Length: 286
Image 1 (cartoon, one colour):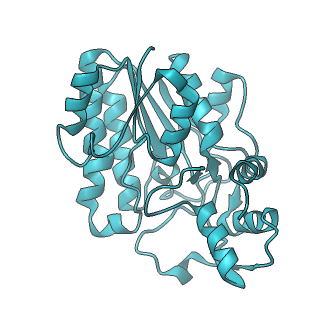
Image 2 (cartoon, rainbow, N blue to C red):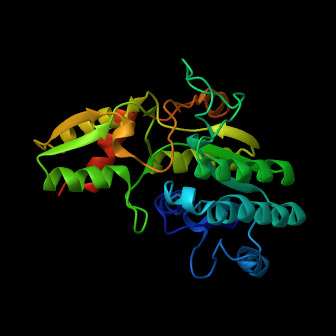
């Protein structure tokens, strides 16, 4: 695969994918490609004719999606459908990044969720992401859908940042932080995830995969680790999700099992604590 288009290359995962791909990367983002505009991605793909496509773009404003579900469906559902149609017609592989938010509506599991577990999203955002991944899998024979969780990287999402950056900023400004302690998942560093995505693509391991760092935690536990590693004195106080009064419901348990990925690659991503420490080392603490 000589030229691999990374759509959303300026984002945190896209940045690390470009790093891993090196000379094979064909990075693109706005304004050249606007996933909310029909035909934008296809026109760019027609011009550049990549040998594979990785879609890192998403409408990821979870609460805003409750107010404008059509906008979320347009970017997370219909745009991947158009890319899948283009890739299928061109016989080009398509990698699509999805989310743990496709789960959450069933009875709280007692074990990490596998690719065989039935999705049950509880938000407009989760529903839109599920629509997108189903279009990709149904339309493009050589497709790779990777579900992950709570991404953070060295290049935070414009206008939104990421959870690690937000907690570092707030812990420098405040004496205490109140963080939810009833949502269990696995925040994942884009540094290692990018390597896994490229390796799965190079192995042509088509299908659906879960890929997160190992272990699990609540956002409260994650914040405690961030504060401790950053040597901050900020108190971290656990709260219930209901205290935040957010428009969108979040999964209470969305820990993903990476066993299928391990069976193909022969390895797992590091424990979330190890990945976080390495990320903060690379980033430097201000």
